[in-house]
Image (cartoon, rainbow, N blue to C red; front, side, top):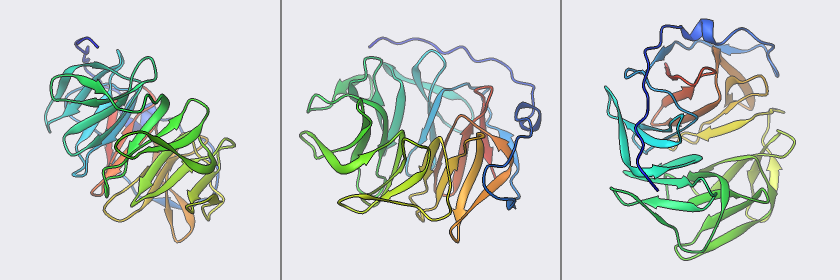
Length: 249
């Protein structure tokens, strides 16, 4: 893996103009949310956050950056397709779909010879999970990759050992230990995230709107839209439709 500097550009478009109004896929309940750009003029494809809510991104050139509160800082030498973070350690799906762990200056392949499409870390346990190349669901036991039974998915989030996935048909499921059951609310989504502080679920819907589950109802987070999202310690961050990076409050 080699180091490559991200090109950062000034962004003048507002969140409201970037995310044109679209049809609500589920219900008409809207939660007031103010969306603002994070400082630093960063762009990204995928986003994750550590347990304290610090965001990390896969940049437009597939290099890896973290946000220090003011600017986006490059992480060592590495490229990726998707990213998760535990503590200060990033885990990435490499460009060849192999799975790597950050060392501080670069990356080493995780043991077990796994390959995947997307990755997450359970912030409660530190366990790494992936969607495999066959869309199966796997977790790492420290030595090798173990398949979670009876499930396929397109994206994944995990809370205290329980996986939540976007199913192959876009519906949203929760693992039971031996199978999956649909999450209440009849929701559909593309990307999923969960707050380790309280287990609150968030998704980007089929219209790319941002939703959260409250009292078994999927509620829209105001008028924002995004390609990916992350949340931890009540800090919601979204990759916008133009790949710029926003916070929701």
